[in-house]
Image (cartoon, rainbow, N blue to C red; front, side, top):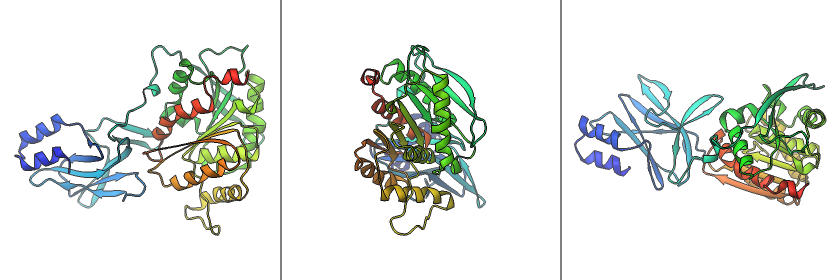
Length: 377
């Protein structure tokens, strides 16, 4: 129990005391290594719903006797970031709601969750547009594909773009979502303005069939490497060295990035893999994650059996509160064994867009340091 709840429990629990409690505290209540979730209102039960793998996904809040205040304290390490909702049960009907007293929200394609920021966590300042940072501009292009037909792609051109210069190329899987939910547009503007990364051209790709196309689909690898990149090289001033090409993806998008690089070894000199769905089996071929993962498991089993150097630098990140943490941890020494240069980062976070957002600065600046142009000029 938090100190604030303890103080309220031993004192008067009248309306004035409750008003003072809510007025004098920010919610949830954060102490060094624990967080207390608070909900107020009449209900039969109140449950915390969260996405921390390893803890029961539903935890009951306790009602403070004589009040309509419900609370639950969990031990959560410093610098954690936790997305959650409340399930309020009335008459055997549970309704999931965001925390009405917590202004911090994280949005994703399915809606929004409340966010608890553990002690010491800070929202990165470089995700917000800086008033002095010039903005890149976007172009919508449609490149023909023999496997997918016409495929629209959004192209980012840096603020200092000049047709007389040559630029690295970053290809982003789930590009629309990276822009909407991971602040990649502002991040690119800020990092280029600060010269933490070189000016680069970015291709934001998306598909309505990602679970199929991103699961080691040879058509996807062919489209990117044999169709999209050559089209972009014909229409934009791109560097054509492998070190100047990078694939970025999260979850199934990370599988797509890795499997594409495996099918075209040496073509992409940079990979940025976030919370990859790198499911595999140590014994047999049974896959407990369901049929969508079957092609991923086959791919990962084959690559684990015969790992090879496919790129030059690989940045891997994952959240310690994800069910995929074991798979990502085990991938790192496998990649390193091939001689590739690998950087791995974990965060106390889950499988979500803001976790991936928070790792972009370190990943991009390590793959493409500010001195990149001098190195590969």
